[in-house]
Image 1: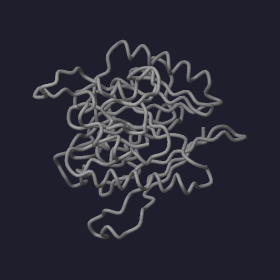
Image 2: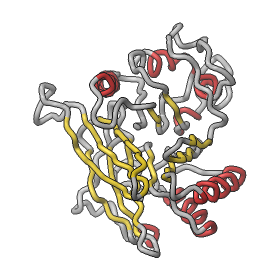
Image 3: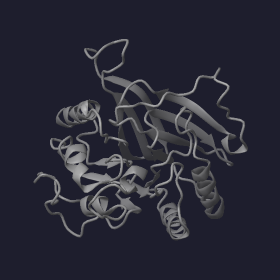
Image 4: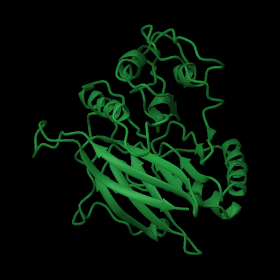
Length: 318
């Protein structure tokens, strides 16, 4: 799982991230080979154009052997007004990920990777061990989810809750609800939206994943009844500019907002690109979700000769 892989400038970081994912696929750990990659959005910068998919997606991921699912990011949905070819928001994304059957994508450079069959821009991937609910946050910087998708999410959470003893409830949205970075910061729009839905249904997911912010952050949020939900940002997938986390002494930023109450920053990595490796397993006592964040060697203090680093690990027992 990762987000924000594209970019108009250097593709070096994206290629290194994908190369490490391929290496780990070819040398599987005790969980076996990854079944798929889940992309958290911003596949193509800056305006989701057809002509950028070959360079920013199909070529870098040409050797990744597993299927790739995705939710759109704001850049995937944006439209370039200066492009002489008229197109609508998400036309290219739909062609690549929301096809009716797998086929060669006409603007892929005849890549071997075929189009993916996903039912919608927001959709649920239902597996034997988890329901992965993917939202579409639209084009704005802090995201906005319309009433129709809100009604759908309420129904999805209710359906997921009925399977809770057997499956993890995983929620994905491109715009990060919580972030301590100096570029975007937390999306109060997303926080209000999600907390409103959680309050209405009485249901909170087991974990929330997002991208948008170009780094890795893991937050923990406490809910009534003793449940703690990890909110994880994994947006350092390849875009060459990383977003630093604000210093505690930087008085330009503050956590003095009631919407941030009960939220703790547990770990972060804002100096290296990387990806999440997620395993979800049924065990005798229930379902266990494990996560590991791996980074590629690019830290300016260690140089490119450094090894791949396991920068964070977490376990969620459900």
